[in-house]
Length: 150
Image (tube, rainbow, N blue to C red):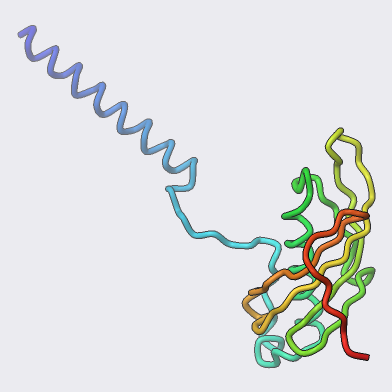
């Protein structure tokens, strides 16, 4: 009879461990490796039909620019960007540039406002695909600025 109790106890321990593992997998998201950009807005049906829509293009340029800037901040999780209407943009073919500002913590934890300028190539704004060529945040620069034709 003692052997049966030991086996029942072992079965209960295994079941308990499986239950805990199931809870952890559920809480942790099940290990889904799909990466999505939650900052990328879903275009409306009319915008999907017209990829040259100014609103769609400007939104995509703004989202890409913010991504480039965030990738270059010391504490990107604290970033609070200017609005789309406060951002200036340029385009020449597949070359885009945007300027704006961001409030974010610096390396010492102080919240500061920084002006930024980014430039990138994109031949498919709808998919938010880009190649960054230049970024400046305040006086820190990286890359090579390409002049736009007059």
